[in-house]
Length: 90
Image 1 (cartoon, one colour):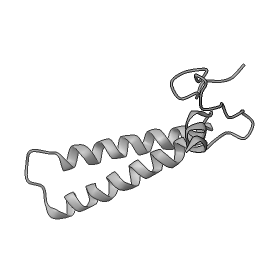
Image 2: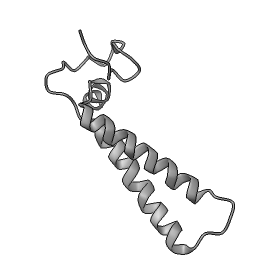
Image 3: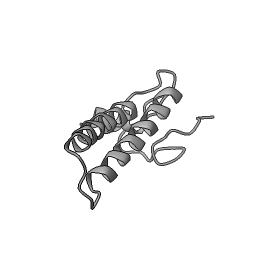
């Protein structure tokens, strides 16, 4: 569990940061479709479910990808450079 927390706080490479953001947008769009107050066709609901699963998995895996050049911070310390430690280290 500590290793997962360390990886979540470590610096994420730029490609995976973009991929994480795309996954979050896809998951948000799917959530909006699934929670729409109107009746949608079954195919749209099914595709939205798949989009939600794929978007959330892409975002999770991308956040846990670490940059090899940047050190991985220990779990007990506060991350430097933002909430998730994605800021550039000096």
